[in-house]
Image (cartoon, helix red, strand yellow):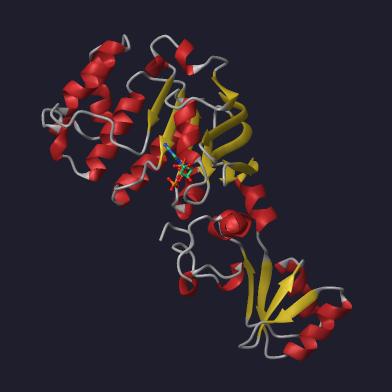
Length: 320
Ligand SMILES: Nc1ncnc2c1ncn2[C@@H]1O[C@H](COP(=O)(O)OP(=O)(O)OP(=O)(O)O)[C@@H](O)[C@H]1O
């Protein structure tokens, strides 16, 4: 378990992390989201004792990072920046970490195997691709068989097979009862991986809730309906107290009605339907909606995100 209590970090005038309080629980994958510059990496660095909080407190299973004996056996982390000596082989890099944390040498081979780097174990890491570097970082995180794992942008540089592999790995670590805390900008990936979300913007907590609740609260769900008897269908829906709006091309968007109910009403009134499809909002849509106010780095206006329904998702809030 990771517990943050009023955690704050200032760099001069800049408040990078602002009074953050939340708990990351075991047994599930918790996603950590926020626009560029929201304070995710700073928060993760404070959890690991790499940055000192200006105020507040963070504990790992009840202790400060500095109080942990052999910390890699409590918490394993992959941070964004490569933090290893490029002149060492992958095997030696992990062996050094193992020695300094009282971890048996046999674990090095095991984790190299887990991340698929056995064949390059004796190669110097400076020749590693970004994806190989990520795998080595994940091997280091797993080395001490810790109960808590924290990954900052773990799918960076990974190919589709690698992304699938890390997703499966994170879920299985959580299923073993471990605490898994992961940041990512890839919303589609996060939607497949995380069960719970912590969302921050400009250093402040914006949401701490389940994935399903987050999407339901921050986006619009509706049923898309097409019928050759549109006017009649509008009357019937109106009489039933259901609000429908025309969205062009003969499509009706029905808020607050279930597809089953709309279908039954149409059937009772012998109205033909050509389409009846519930529209599920995506995590990306909900995220953009919630964080729109706290985006620091906008692209130029022609690519800036518009309101959710017609949005060009993905690039607008990235650092330009
Ligand atoms: N060492 C530092 N000195 C001054 N400002 C810093 C420092 N580290 C971070 N910041 C600032 O603090 C804010 C939060 O940065 P941080 O890297 O934690 O955000 P992030 O959510 O991880 O962003 P990204 O998604 O782009 O990686 C940013 O405005 C950043 O410029």
